[in-house]
Image (tube, rainbow, N blue to C red; front, side, top):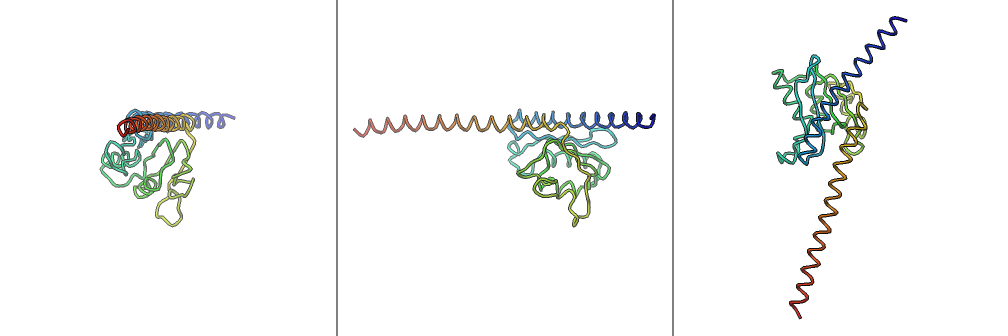
Length: 189
């Protein structure tokens, strides 16, 4: 009975830590959102400390590789002064794409925790599984679903905002074109 209680308390403490780290990744995603970037955030944890953070900066840097995970990996390898992250864990708000999953394998990260699955580009189980591909030289322990709703909400909100601004932009454009057409018709009479 006492062993069961201790195990339960331990599992609750571990879950709390996972939630805390994912909340930090979510803060990074919010930074991306505020900068009109796709809101993805990541943190890398080593020995129970966050050693690196990243959020998408593709638009700002005009760099298609400037994903949150890639920025966090670079920060962590610089911090530890090594190319291997085999004792570190990555927390990221959405399932990594093939580029990021490949980089995580190459960095030999130990654990990957992601919030929401990505049915379009997810490469850790959704459309392919680079993180646990039997032909690769490293496999990553993967767990998903931590703060899934909160992270998914931020992504939905971002893309909803994009769609709304495109619709508004197309209305402005069509109104502008209609005005030019009226002016053109008057000038040709």
